[in-house]
Image 1 (cartoon, rainbow, N blue to C red):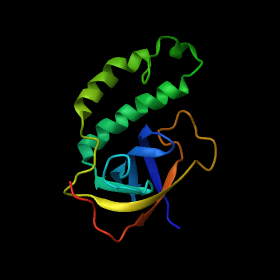
Image 2 (cartoon, rainbow, N blue to C red; image 1 turned 90 degrees about the vertical axis):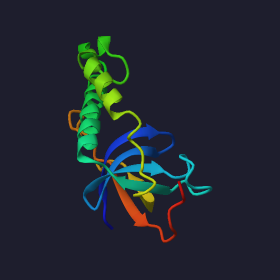
Image 3 (cartoon, rainbow, N blue to C red; image 1 turned 120 degrees about the vertical axis):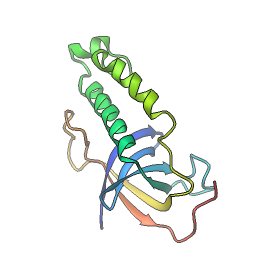
Image 4 (spheres, one colour; image 1 turned 180 degrees about the horizontal axis):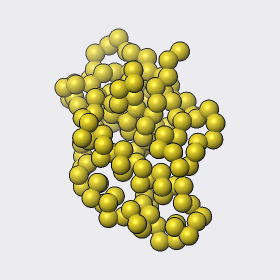
Length: 148
């Protein structure tokens, strides 16, 4: 059984829906096929596309801002915080959000279809760490990706 790291979770509703995870150690954007209209029935199907290094750097910098926000809960730093950034990170988060725009999406011309099994961290995550320990197991699907 091979596991890859889940690097980010940008949309979560009863499970991971959109974010960045590794596939064979290489970062990819993942999107839940059912929630994003690419699958009719199966909510375990995900579409993965490679992520450009420049976009990955922006997304990971913004993820670090989010992790600092989470880690600061209940501390004096959190007093002026506004979801999803601490006051000291707000301007940079806003700039990153603009720079990322709508590019955190799978590429219809370059994506693969997988069944996903997400696994929680094996131990309590370090709130200061960028990776929270979440893992995923990808199983390739035999049928071709849905169009568009």
